[in-house]
Length: 160
Image (cartoon, rainbow, N blue to C red):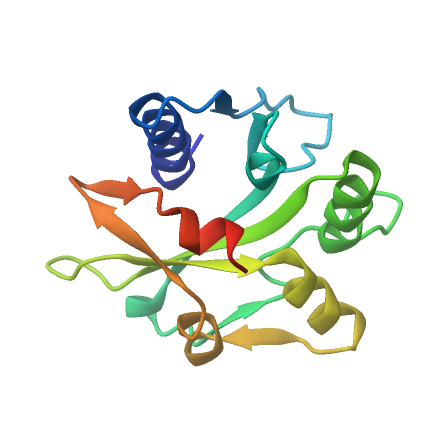
């Protein structure tokens, strides 16, 4: 589990506890030969918090100017793209999906993260687009940094 994923899990669970909401966020253990549907799952009887979140982290300081659908996502042995697998899982499970994208700007610069509705990601991919630029990603609601991690703000997740 990456630091970004762990931070989101901890943030959601703290939010639920602080606000007395029945819910839990977790990451399923990833096995070497078993595909993982999503990085972070959030379960709650409140449908606003029944989520599936894929996490991507981009090193902007190294010159990456976009999130590329071929470079940053995988294709399995059967030729099925990760965006297709996630879209199918979200549809089957009834979860609301998001792509949480963290932008890393290098030492001495604060990281930034954004919550992108999965529908926007899948629509772009299935339309034949090859990427989402840093500028496009930055136009989505930001996730607020707090104490080295992120603070869950309901508006970033359930208002989209």
